[in-house]
Image 1 (tube, rainbow, N blue to C red):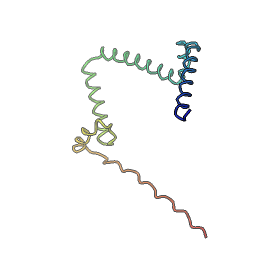
Image 2: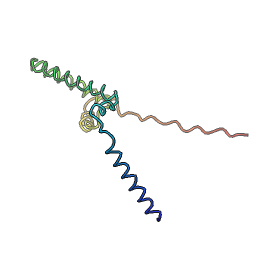
Image 3: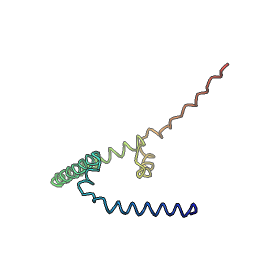
Image 4: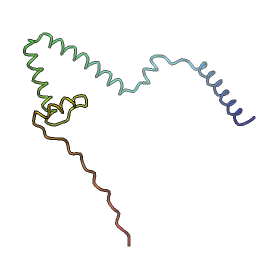
Length: 127
């Protein structure tokens, strides 16, 4: 046999063995698959479910609220966050065009100075 045909033969043999082992092995149950999922995932999943429940509860309470008071609270929050973004210039990427436009009208700290990397240390010459 040449190198290619022996390689092909070994691949085919291993595929036949794998197929036999897949048929011979009992199928994994759903409980076995769930046990294989890490605990960290279940903690995050549980927190996400609690977050959705809390959000629904919160939105139902807001729906019963006086709409004028709600509008004043939302406007105040948006104004506070927006002016903070303009002053600090730490806005998310999607808000950069609007914040850049508003930065011309409102006070700002100015652009962030990028930290300057220290030059690499030069090793001392040995004598």
